[in-house]
Length: 459
Image 1: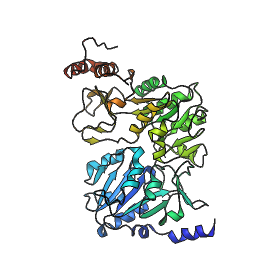
Image 2: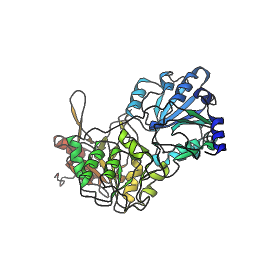
Image 3: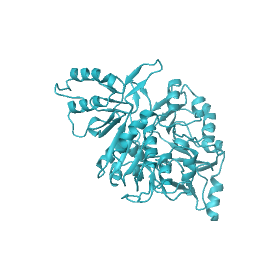
Image 4: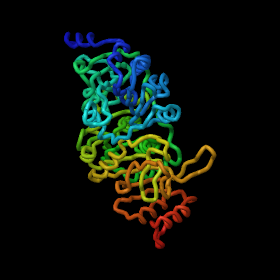
């Protein structure tokens, strides 16, 4: 390793306590995404609570352990915590604390929020100073810190803040790129050698019977050479299992989230990327969450391409691959075909994330389709069963995808295509894939809402 690189490293190497001393009252502090959340520096910053004021923390998909800035300050006297995309832990924290908030985004635009807004005096509420703290792989022989599982908007954040702290973790897989998957020691202000915490593994459970039925309907739309985007949920996992056992070949991957299914498909010889227009032969992604097996597969694997989110999620990029099949999950759909994938009333469940981006980009792809999956019903703790296809959303419910963007919707009772349909046609088709026990009630609601014709028929 060149002497000047090692000299820079030694000059910037410090303890967590020394690193966070550069954070002053009024700072905006980015904690990164997913497994990239700092731990030693988080504890050190929390310990300075009595010296600080008006600190805004930004994170995304908060994973355990709970940030100490929250456990130390649950009333939000010093620290306010904003999350780009709620996880189950985020929901719990918001229910128990006064300083946890959802920060709505379009994921493809995320990098613009850093480059356009940070330190811009013309934007109301923009902080005077800012910092980024993120876990990275240890520095390589060329002086670079690889971002591992969480490329996303990390590079843009680090290069648009005043204080740049990397907290190294040797357990992070080194993920080649790609685009913007690393930062050089010369661009960093502080290096903290972390205590190498274990990565959170999220292996997906075995699909349910309902998820397998939905996956079977999705399979009708996948042919040789399709480029796949899997969202979060059991259905994409079930589709992956079906694909492994299928005769399909030359599938591709262009996805925001890399999950175990892609590694399984690659190892089964189904996923080659040979027919992709962009990143041919590569599995292009912007973050990864899965099992330890997935993380081992990714480490120094030249078949993967770690890319920043503005590249992966921009609809103009997505559409450049032909036959993009985007598979995402939803919580509810109303009779107008509006999609709710993030809240139940005023209760924030997850977030928009990149769903909007891929719904748009996949439909613009030549031969592409956007598929949104949801079970027809859900069951509350009291045993009562409710339809996920509803006449209209209750107050507070967020529309994640507007009706005019919706392409294909799948439940266990079948699939429907809605592009170009009128309101009454959408209502009829949606009721046809609702649970049979709720169809009559939905027809009455559609009649009351004047989106039903007497000549309508339910298959």
